[in-house]
Image (cartoon, rainbow, N blue to C red):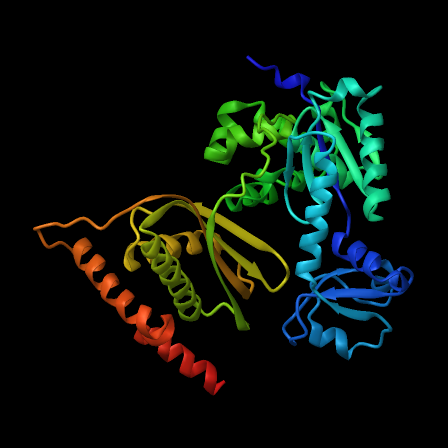
Length: 396
């Protein structure tokens, strides 16, 4: 049995990745105030900005319409997703030259398991220095590297320790976390856990460490999240670094014309995206064992929930997606976009059944809709509620 205590996990992060990327692309921007925006639409927001722009009063999450009304000299740059993707892929290749066990977790963020290659270096700090220098030499990006025996502590250390390369030695995880704000723990952001933390003023991790020591009390307070919260507060994490498998996937996304929390509009949007996913699944004669529904709010926050499909007809796929959406959307903020991503496909063929059930009716109706859409396009036939919503949008 593998000893997780002997693992050497690196979290490599390029802070302000988009900002650094733009300054690599155009060196004249290196000392100028700049802000990267999600879009030039008035409802777009600032997603990243330089310290110079921050000094002029701009901030992350600020609406583009407000930024343009302010008196500042910052240049507003559009979000260059294709360039960021290419640069991130190049960074992945660079980091992978040191170990094959690399897990990308967003633009400019990687986990690496250096356990099997640490013997090539004097110590983990030296290994981190070599990796950071290679990234700097090949991409001109600066990086911060946190090293510990697990992913959780390595990730948290990068967020709170200013040194570019640092290590939390095994056995010191709990002591390291103790004085930190409780918000560093992932489970502290669960709605029910967050309520208890606020109510009891558990502002620091050491206070949570004390409570989870009383198992029965902790179970009453935190319920199903007790065990995970206890492990996190002690710096325990057995999750492994997972290199990407690049799975085949079906993705549909809607960026709303106006930020909204209108329930009818949002449910209609989710249902339309779900039907598109279902349509594509039926063309492949498959269903998906994993589906991700992700929503993005106006303040830059995003939330995700996972589930799976049992079939590929419109009603069943739509219902799963609507249920996941409702679990995601527990904030009062307005929503900017909704995304549905289906993966892990398995064969699924419609079965002939001599008995007519609601499920066979759903399958039959979905097939009829497919024939129409194959001939005239997907948007040629839509639900009445979707058409009504479109008419309302045109009027506004």
